[in-house]
Image (cartoon, rainbow, N blue to C red; front, side, top):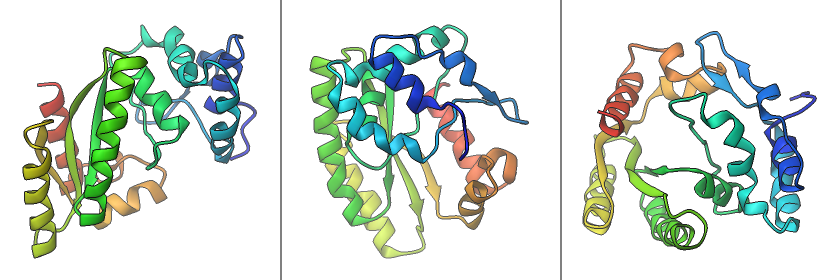
Length: 204
């Protein structure tokens, strides 16, 4: 957590019209994955970026110098519709909507799709919905199976729903605690295989 600079400082500097130098922040993991680090300071962005006239574009503009270096840039968002998520939507070309196999989670998808629609019209005309990804699904339970069916009925004609379903897994819970991706932590596990299958669906 004790970092001299993070994506938060780069975004705020960019929003203020200066060069955030995001390239100086890139850290490469042992698995060869480049990361832009963040810590608890990022939560402060919800206040700071709203004060900037072009705060919604801070992440997009911050990442521009790096974009040409990578085939894919993944933006991990908080489970909320605050300015961090709208920044990601304004910067992205595609969005994957993770949907936990739970009835309460279903209710949030409509609101997210509405927000995405507004972003598409006003801030990012290139943004598309790649699909809804069902996660943390314990298909042994009737509840999870009913949620999956309800998701297909409610959203299947509006946006794609990935065939891949990420099932509830102890390994998937352990990987973040170990500071590793599931592909590194348990590369042969069902969770790792599910994310490989998802990658093939997104980019055949």
